[in-house]
Length: 171
Image 1 (spheres, rainbow, N blue to C red):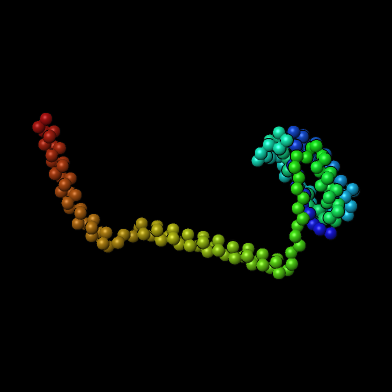
Image 2 (cartoon, helix red, strand yellow):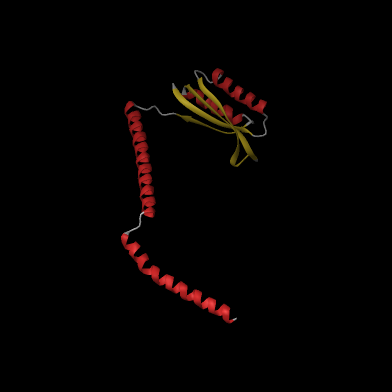
């Protein structure tokens, strides 16, 4: 017994009642005619716009069914789905069986990814704090430069103000 996932797209022109009818018909076909298939989960994913037109249709209703069964029954199911006019596209995927070592490896990879994300977030937070601190604190050399340039700018401003006032008086 293998575990499979079937995803199919129902024609978008079908009404909601028709979608339920088609999904129920496919589920019943899986249970009765294919042999030794048991449905673990059947889920309507809803109406979506297709990436490209299929049979001149631009919308479709996606349905996913997870079930277990024998390989010979899958061929019969595939043929039935191809002949059904209400179904635009379908795909049947066999899930791989994972060993304990593979499961443990996946778990450690997930943990490492989470740690690296947390580490990256911490680095970004520290860098942000450092830049905000730099904005608040100025270097002493910068303060000296400002002090030296301040009197010159004040003298220049006074000279310009005097010139403007003299022009106004003359005019």
